[in-house]
Figure 1 (cartoon, each protein chain N blue to C red):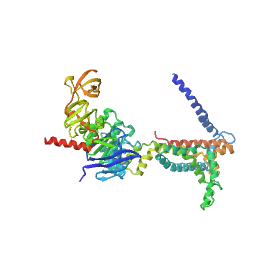
Figure 2: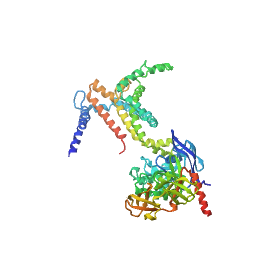
Figure 3: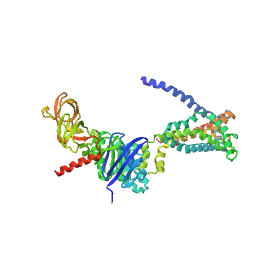
Figure 4: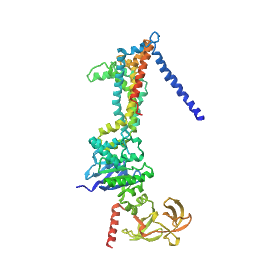
Length: 264
Length: 367
């Protein structure tokens, strides 16, 4: 009996948190999505979402999030693999993680400097004879900075999966005649797939709704769903449409989570 | 023609950084026998296994498999398969695919793989378990899958790294029988690593006792039990009473202040030696008939026998295994035969030891 009471007390912060910051906002977003800009109850927002403008935006959000995830994965897997082989692996890992503690905006501003017309990158290009290029406000800079920001979150779960992989599995594959490549393809990768899935989730989902970077680094040339929501709430004041996009964003995230979820 | 020697180590050394794990190890193993590498943890026995498998490279020396030098040949190119201590069964593959793994690597045809896997499963009494997931299998079943995964490749040698250590006593004993039986049926060389001396004695054709990176003694279980070369082997294999003594002359040894007849020879006169008497070779007699007089300190009931700890007048401890019941504090006599006195020389190498033993074997046959 006593234990039950204590458990209930422990539950209070969790219950409060979930109600105030998860359930209520979702209900509010759902509620607002049914009001047009004049404040009338309607489903016009949902109809608007299926017009080419928004569908294109959704597609481009997807495309950029996909590229960011893919490039992060391509860089993160070998990096994590290499890290597990080093002597002071925890230290090297920490060095990669530390930048992720720095505020995202600060890092974005830093890249404005680095990629700017008179920044060190262009200075270097000038020096090797290529000449000054427009780097900032391009797709390239947007993806580059996004990958830079997300990569620790991709490395960490993959590193953990590789680190927990018992070396005797690799010995066993080797023992049974598998080459290095076959060992990787048939044993190491399948056994670290959970880490890869987790990494993709924590990169892809936030990448879908990136918005500050799109303005600061991509100069609003890249419009994602995140940017659209921000614009509707802060600029056009069309809360209904903003909420509708948010509903779809949540749906997409939810579907992605199911698709990359671990097998039960 | 086939070589009778399947594995050969020639002055093999292995260092990790500055740690010498194997120190100048030389031995040969014959085809089709059951070998056991026996020693305490950290003695280097697993390193020998890993060298044979190809998971690690020797610092110096030569390793031959079937007459071919294999020092730099990687594990995946050796006709050797391993049963790992933790089995290392791939958790993402089912029983069938685990066993088929090696065959798939050889690009064998599916139909043939199916036949072979089925055969291997039958061999380890797991027919019908093809589609089980590894996590659905019990410890003993996983053990069998690991063995099937090794034998299906028809290797020259199967290496077993303490494969029974995770099983409970009953299952372990059963698997000892099964492994021995399997080895006989297959006729493949087994190299078995263990720190359990009973396991080693029960299963092996030949045992290598290893300590501190060196082979201390090799021989049949009976040889090693009856004629341990030094204190380490005597202590590690079975239980023993070890006392300091002196070899007066051939067949005459003195210890605990008395002189006894024995069957050992070939030492220098008055050479200092160590004497081993196994606890089961000590017989309890009335005090006046005993060769030694001891007082009983403790008695432990072990099921099949009593384990008695006694102390003689000179203060030496004696461990006795007997089925007779005795009382603590009682004075008894201990009797033993000349054959049960085992004399060990200090720092005798295995070579010298074999030579000395060989010499008096000849002596006996001439007489």
